[in-house]
Length: 258
Image (cartoon, rainbow, N blue to C red; front, side, top):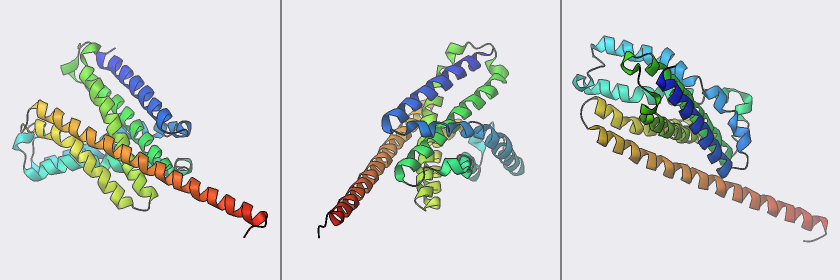
């Protein structure tokens, strides 16, 4: 078995356990969201094979750009490459919402937040498996022992979190009747996360700068997730207070109060 497959199994297991644990901590309804990860798992392979690859290769051939030498590519092509993944992936990550059961919890901020987060994490776990398949097929990594793929584990674990927050932003926008705002926000966050890696591939920055760029985006994503969580808690608290007032009012009327 190729070493990357062993590390992929470890990565998928660690990611699934960690983000299930996170859901368990942040919401008492965590069990009802878990199944949403299942329809999201194959979406990375679908969007890469059927959408991103043909579009990317088609535009590169039309423009006469060698994708192995991005440093010589025109600026417009680099912008195209930067936006291709965010535009396509953020759209397909919410495809499971076509299922009626997947839309069942979108009536409030809390449901939208954790529905989106789980869809994104599921997409990220599926993406980790898809990338492992691609790495295993490359002769450059043949014979590499599994324990040397720690960079893959670290990156994929972080990317799962990133996908979760981005999709949470999008689904929250959908639930609030602001689909364009949610989609654009998710796309911009996704593009920001990929910008450092693209700059490194183009030869503009060293790998340390690309890593630092990703770390900065992850911090921003963590702040956004906490902000969305607090907004959901405030909405739940307000709804509970209003319900209590209604109950007290009805009790008062029943008992003959004025």
